[in-house]
Image (cartoon, rainbow, N blue to C red; front, side, top):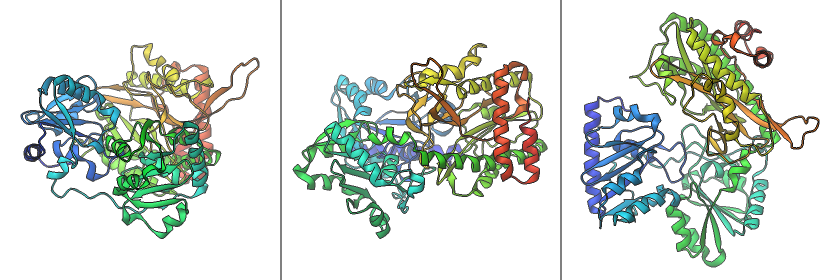
Length: 604
């Protein structure tokens, strides 16, 4: 984050905006779109692709800006309504809501007949452009791809694309060989009538070829594209500096290596050898679809077949995931024991707490770094769902305050994500009751049994029911999919109020994280990762039953539990969970920490 004074930051924004407008004039466009995205539409992007932040100052993970000759706007979602006003000069940009006041509506109001709307076709998918194209057409304006990104044209000292080395990912962690994975995909292609598929999602490429990299923050990915034919031949397009003899050997004779920028040339070279090439409709760019068509092929925008397959972990992968959660739970428990003695002193800051937790995790075997930026929110900061402490916001954790701690680790055998809310001192009656309502929802979801074919959206109400009874709720999803030494957020599965039609299947790992947030005062969230598994049958059942296996192992703060609010079944669940936590983790802890854990997991 940029810690310069607002006046200095806003002056730089004005200079950069003016430079972009000069570049727009040179490119003969009247408006230009700057998304917070790279060529692969990933959640995290490398520094070279942080164009929106460089131009506007906005550092959030989702956003968009549109610049015209006389006006400009920045579009953000509800998570960032406060942050955008702090980071972006309101004299230069209008603040708009990404969903309620979308860019296509703003463009419809501001574009005039004969104007040209420019965009970088590498940073937009065809579906993502559809409403913008419609708005431009209705306004009588043209939408025009610009060959060179106009922000790049004026960004002095722009970081280069990263060139971190590619590492083969061992089969013992991957669960399947790369060859076996590719056979699954080629069989799918043949069934779908595709001659090849162009992979653009970085996690799909990592999974398909059993490779990992370090080009993207928090996620072990390497920038690249991949083409795989239905005959099992393919090309991996990556920066030349990443290509080693070891990588050639790992990929085998059927997978060639080529430069990251050689996709178009390779397609042209293949000429009429292929007919129909699949392109991921969610991450495949307009540029890529145009390249496929220009080379004489049919570009079929369809679902990436890897997404659904990699969501269902193999037995080998699940064994690794469980092992990673044991080590992660031990590290988190050591931290919580340390926190219980340090926080009451009233001098510990959010950043110090997050850094200390990171140090505990770094001591664990197979640890490779955090899976996302730790959220350590004390008091009112805990009510900011995607809070990240900065030197300006860094709060001291004081007595009688709640601390919300959401963190995770990347391990060679698994990815973790866990949230615990703890009280320093004595909670209020309201805090205890609302924590317990969140806990009731967490237990209801974690203990659920459901018939095969059930989606996450059908289960979501279980986590909210107790809160709803008292007129309370939370404004985020209840669960997201998690990868194996890949993304901490992955699809297609999720648990949310609406919109998810993907059935939960055995082997899927997903979070269970209901919460409650009182703006300006405190936040509560309890998050475990769970895995879908087959449940024991019952007499008279007509459909197979599924259930969740809780993977995360860490104590839930009993000081925040109002025992009278829990049912007998809920108490039994919490006691059983804490017994499992204690029995599993104690052998990995020093004597003082084990003693603390014994008290923290006492029966209620």
